[in-house]
Image 1 (cartoon, rainbow, N blue to C red):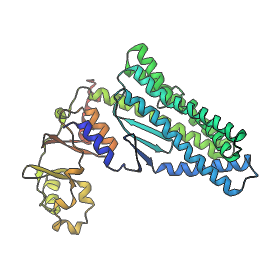
Image 2 (tube, helix red, strand yellow; image 1 turned 180 degrees about the horizontal axis):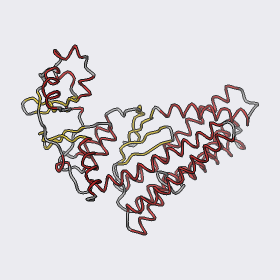
Image 3 (cartoon, rainbow, N blue to C red; image 1 turned 120 degrees about the horizontal axis):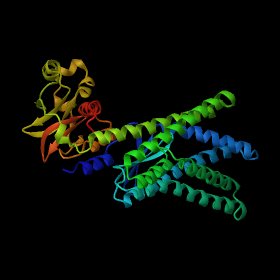
Image 4 (cartoon, rainbow, N blue to C red; image 1 turned 135 degrees about the vertical axis):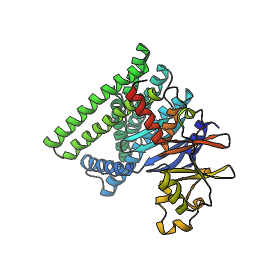
Length: 390
């Protein structure tokens, strides 16, 4: 079983925690994080007020309508920015798992890092180039709708989108992780030095410095200027950049610690297999309380039927435990994300993070041979770091 293909297939069919699906474009699932709704309202309100100041002769309904349309088109531009990254990644054979719009814009989630500096450079630069091209297109449209066909509202919307796309391209080219400019910088340093890890540390370090600058500037503006919300927003962006820069270093350390290790090397053996007919009460009284076990593979005649964890048990009313069979509460086999024993630990970590899961049955052919848990991964990582063996 190919674990990467399995994860990709599941990615297209299961719900994303904290987000809703917009379907797929060119086979790439598109999600909208619920945090996007907050920024959509804020941006729509801000743009509408800008239109009130710049076009006082418009009707109030025109201000609101222009604000809504501009916001929707802006996020379409953010989506196209991420599609630029995604399509170039596909050219180099890197699977794109999804595109998600969220509070700070958008992110294209790819299966793995590029293997060559040139690939990294082209994937990173594709987004800002897309935004730059959109800026030119909207500027031309604003001129046409202002001078040729005389559509002042449309012209104003296009002019605003031209400016914001230019700003988006420039902002993303700041040379620090996690921005596109930081990835461009990493690609250049990687090409010159030949060291991916060193290049990542440099780009993340600069990204952290830039993030602290944004935080400091945001706090200063919030204290000295009104409205203070603008300063707080800048500081919030800085905090996000700092978190992402640190996350890239954590991923680097994890990748090094897990290098060369496969699932079969550290997976846990199945301590006890349970029957789908077993009651929840029997499971609690036996394997859970007596042996401290937390997750169980449900099998019937050697065939995988599902997985039961403490999460499913706690979601079941206690008074129903005695008469509730495990097959009623288990996660059925068809919904499980399983892993091949030959899969890399890095791939397992990425899948668990993508899917917000803490355990994956290890399946060889049609047979469950073990289980991989997040706790096990963290224990191996901690031991590697403490002993300094990698």
